Amino acid sequence: MVAEKIATRLGDQLGIQSHYVKGRRITDGPTLDLVTMVYGGLVNKQIVAALQSHHCNAMGVTGADGNLIKAKKRPVGEVDYGFVGDITPDSVNSTLLYFLLKQNVIPVFAPLTHKNGMMLNTNADTIASVLAISLSKHFDVRLIFCFEKQGVLLDVNKPDSVIRNLNFNLYNDLLTKGSFHDGILPKLENAFSAIQSGVKEVLIGEHTHLLANTGYDTKGTLITQA
Image (tube, rainbow, N blue to C red):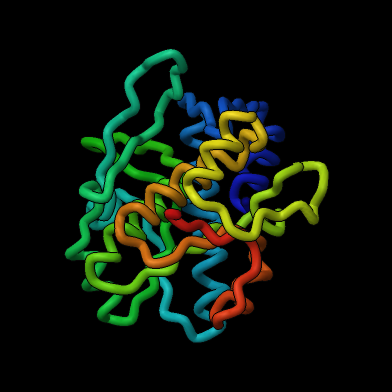
């Protein structure tokens, strides 16, 4: 969300407008250059520097670095998303990722992938989900999606309408009723993909919940299968 806001602000200054369909960014050529600069450069390195200041051995990467995440350019369908990369758990170079973690290196991923030398913009929630699924083969993985809300809201205009537990049946029911804001849909799609693919636990909430969620008390929305 920090990166998204900075990219939008810089885009406005450069005359590059942001366009979204169902919470997903349309990435034309100028937008690809913009998100590469912001996600792969400015914000990524700021996060790495902040982690290093707390004695966390972090390293900033994109999917192109070490061939960590290969993608396929999304084909043009009802919507032309432009330079957007689609990925699956098999897209991840799990050998290198596992090696980095075993060396106590914390990879900080910018939401950028690649295909035969072409950089592609990939949804950050999708990258987080795919990485979590890949790592679940080696570790018990807890995936936490952070954004500016307290959790998944039943009513976007009521900050206290947090759904504490959301299973797949309730999700489908609320989705059919149109209860969700478009912006939360990518997170929910990726959350259920992760929980159905071996990830131990998925939480959606505000970044201030991170410390609270390191124990047994959970804040935000807990995603469950049933």
